[in-house]
Amino acid sequence: MAHKVIGNYGLFLHAHLPYLLNHGRWPQGSEWLGEAAAETYLPLLNILDELIQEGFHPKITMDISPVLAEQLSAPSFHREMQGYLHSRIQIAQQNQNTFIKDKNDQLFYLAQRWEAYYQQLMVQFSDDLQCDLIAAFRRLQEQGCLEIITSAATHGYLPLLRYDASIHAQIKTAVKTHIRHFHQPPAGIWLPECGYRPGNFWNPPEEIDPGNPGYFRKGLEEFLAENQLKYFIYHAANADTFNYHSPYSNIESAVAKSKYQENLRLSPYQSYQVLRADAKNSGVTAFIRDSATSLQVWSETTGYPGDEWFLEFHRQHFAGGLRYWRITGSDLELDNKKIYEPDKAAGRYEEQAGHFLDVIKSRLGPFYQQQGQPGFLLTPFDAELFGHWWFEGPYFLKSLLKKIELDPELQLQTCSENLAKTPAHPTTILDEGSWGDGGMHKTWLNFQTHGLWQKLYAAEERLQSFLKEMKDGQNSPLEEILKQVLRELLLLQSSDWPFLISTGTGTEYAKRRFLAHLEAFNRLLDLADKYQRCGELAYYEWLIFHNYQLLDMIFPDIELEWIK
Image (cartoon, rainbow, N blue to C red):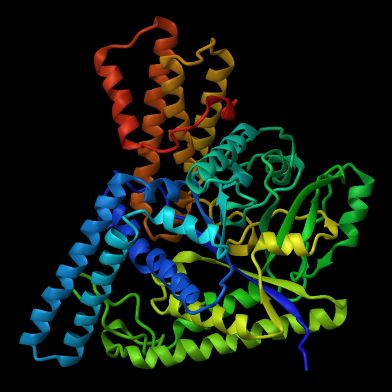
């Protein structure tokens, strides 16, 4: 008897790291890139190749943020990565010598495994991939296994940026950079932190820009439409329906108000075409993040990554930082963790992949019964969860993708495939929000970060004021200086800096980085001002400019028009 397809499943991975090259190595800096590549990006490429070789047809939608793509393709990263892998191999060998002396056979065995693990990664990275991760991801896209989309250029938190020109610059830089790396325009975009702002009367946050009367601003969906981006991911807090908690009081259109009232409760298993504030269809689709289903994988306490048999992330061997212990129990002190047993862990992620398959079907089954058509369940995750934070994560994904493809009641789909096969979407107005704490902006905007945003707003305003008074500088040294000014502004806008400050996971590093880019921005704009007034700069001033170019060497095809 033939089985009906009751639903479609979309796995979405968000790959992003802030700009780290040339800005420190350890404990914060380019080593983060090495960790992510070794523990997430290379294993992900590996499991997809294995699935293809085994006759499967994996389907994943993934964004690789432009700033991450720039770093992964940089020759300096290639050298950093080889050095990182070589150092990990040496550490594993040194640990083996220690464990032999201590006559600890269990730890010696695990150290051998770590050596083999990093040796294999070295071969994969240096020989098989010729150090080119971007080309490897592009190849999988060409094979139909991956749909790669973009994000904002430096992962700027778009809802809070002061000027529309800044949003234009983030998105236009993103699209141009994506085309250069992946040889085709992106169909969709990951809005950083799922941060979305509809068209509405906008008041800058009082604590950042007090007394500003505000003005009407178009919604982010309009910026996307202007750049031929067809969809984005929207955060929904509830598993079965998602609700709007604040009235759209400033929408002037009665039609839009009525449409808003009609859609107070919407299913996350259906995508929606987004209405603008004037009730016209933007032509942009929102896919809904199913938070409750995602939490089953995401949570380190109640989700799969917290299993007692999995590798403990936080306890590291004092000589080199390799990990040899399992979680054992979430309430245990790190010193009480037991030694990791890889074979036991393998059995657990296989079982959990089967359980997650059942969870997916339990969500999509009722929707199919109610609507008479298959729904689309989308679970977005930070890519770095799989491998870096949760060592067994890539193997879980491989098992899950196999089980879904073998299940006759489910289909794997990328977001664009779902759009193509399910073209008729209801229209709706979406509320403001993010996937941060409380569903709004406080993870990035709070008492710890007010000063950062004030400085950022001042920088945005200073550049806008300069450009309004600027004489024609096309194809001139002035334009080249201002392009570097724009790069520094984009780097200032990275959502990573307020996030690291708010979460306390890299507060001092984030502050240093923000202030360093702010200093670069202001010094370069001072040089631009002098060049415009005098028509020349001193030799040492040109050296300052070129040093900043070398330090923050990203987005070579950036255009000054994008910030005007």
